[in-house]
Image (cartoon, rainbow, N blue to C red):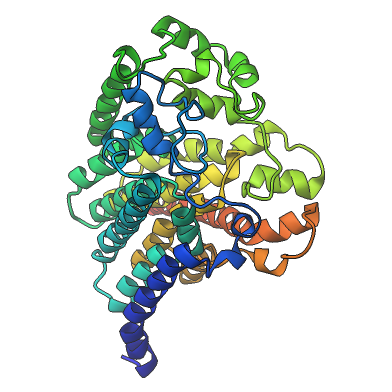
Length: 454
């Protein structure tokens, strides 16, 4: 072992621990505020958190969990609650027992613990000390992770869920059964932010994951139905008949259930628990040009000066859907699972490429992908040059955005592009290269079959 490698291994735990301490102190003193536009120009600490305990308090008062802006207030400021209604019960219930800032502090430590748990789970799958310690630094030290803690968003739960899913697929690829881990990760996502719905086709097609996904999907459907039909869980219900009608009238949902177009006023349809799902329809295809929105559709709209056609935004999702079928049909089990692991990572990135509203804290979910790229090193999944390109792009997202270099300038199209560029472009290139690698794995089996004698 080289001296530099040995010293790096010894230093990394201290660097990680020291940086976490800086993050915690900064939450109190604002040491890192200069790296974030909103920290410098707005009062947003905890703004995404307070709606969670407020959702449970609403239920206890016989109001919709989504009636975030109804009095009485909870906390100094808050954004609209949009997570699964069950999250208001399983997480918001006990957190609502504390005063707002105390509750935010407790949740911050809980979120940090979830990120640490994700780091431990992923790092434990490597025998290399340097890889393990780099994973800890990525998970706990990324700037999007700090911003997630600052605004108090519950995104730590889906990050942990994604880490569990990727860790389970990694173990299944290399000879270990991890159905329980996969099942837990799926449920955590379903009952917080359901990003795993994007993975549904692939995980149902794969014989290794089909049963686990079906079980999780069944529980998700039953619990979600209960949160629609039980009055105490859905106090301002509109009824299943009306929900079904909305499901077949997406244009109506677009027109009447957009929180921004409605100027934060909730109508009767937006007070039903089904808004958790319908908001995905209401917000899709409507890019919001704002300095805080880090999505590819908005980036392209500002870059070109014209709205991006909806079909272009849907291409990444459609591409992963098309690839899911041949990946699931690969005959070689290890090759199939390697391709599935890569495709799952790529699917997790499509949110930033296809959905118009992506916030900086959501880039914390790229960190489990970066960790997985370290874990598959040397296993023959990638060409050597591809592996380092992929990890380098993912690691870029852990660094600060370029906002620091624009402070003092008026916000303009050029300034916004500078702020966004080292988030949007790396994740876009990462997706493209991953899909190229999936295609290469598919071609590898086809080439091997063509060489077999008839």
